[in-house]
Image (cartoon, rainbow, N blue to C red; front, side, top):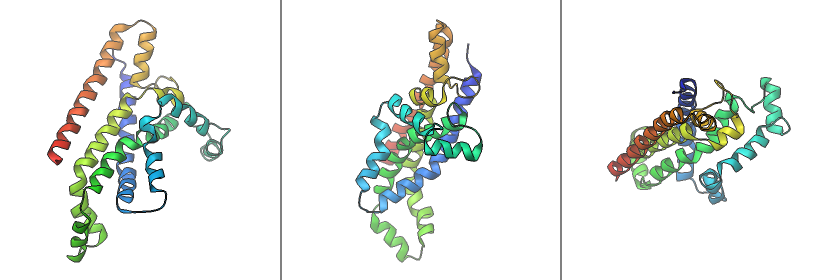
Length: 219
């Protein structure tokens, strides 16, 4: 049977990650595309690290960083009164960190493809920087922005390693659809695992198809 609680929790998590990364990813991608500064390559490498780092490794270090023994985890607990570990808030923050490069990389490539003289021509035409962003940069970079959002959504929806390490397996709180599938396999409920796996498979296929379609139209 389908675990609707885990399904809607996964949708909620993926949607929040997508919305937050839409704004934060835009700021980061545009800044990296147009600014040159010392250590830029190191910053880009740090942002892309979750792409190659095993999820369990990243999840382990996030588990330590979010814990009450770290300065960040202790500060968060002092302010909010509860821990980040094994909570939806911690799961959301971990998912933002892990899905960040999936949103930023397509946006960054899209902004880098915009000719600089096009922005300068807009300024000479009387547009300020904000108007240039809205009327020139944003429409041209939109395929990359949309690709980043779709990838961040799908990646968050199917993530397992970081979710299990930071969020644990609490039904209704941190148990996402991928964790629910793992539970069903452990209890030999292959039919339920198959149904939920098929849902994620369809989402993944639609996502990749949409990204390829956007990239082809952009080209």
